[in-house]
Image (cartoon, rainbow, N blue to C red; front, side, top):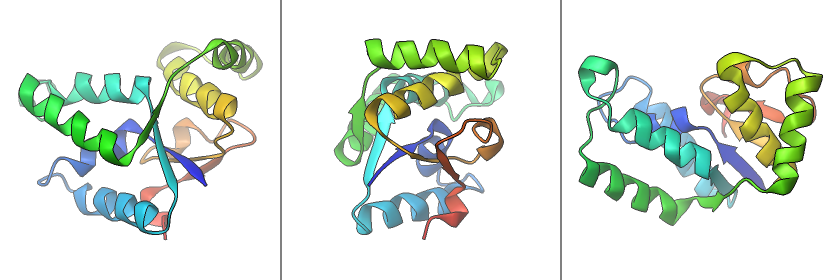
Length: 146
């Protein structure tokens, strides 16, 4: 069954010193072992790059460009990458209007729109509160992945 993996889980999985690393890695390993179809969007990859290449002084891990490229290549071996399309765009417009989404949360609505366009009903995230408002999806904290 497909499951979208939020950017925060991807980032924590590549930061061994981060306190959430073990939970992130365990959740991803569990999904892979049980035969889930782990999915990321192009947006997740762009967000990953954004944060991964930030210096530690700007709340990032300070990856070099080369390190970020290598980590993304590694992630692509385990996660199916899906793109936005005309269908997800139409869904997104409806979501932001129906749920009165504004500000930075429009990015979360984009992820939900892609989920709905591809028939993905589950998302694993360290920030379930960002997605709880949306009907018809199951929001799972990485500690709940079994």
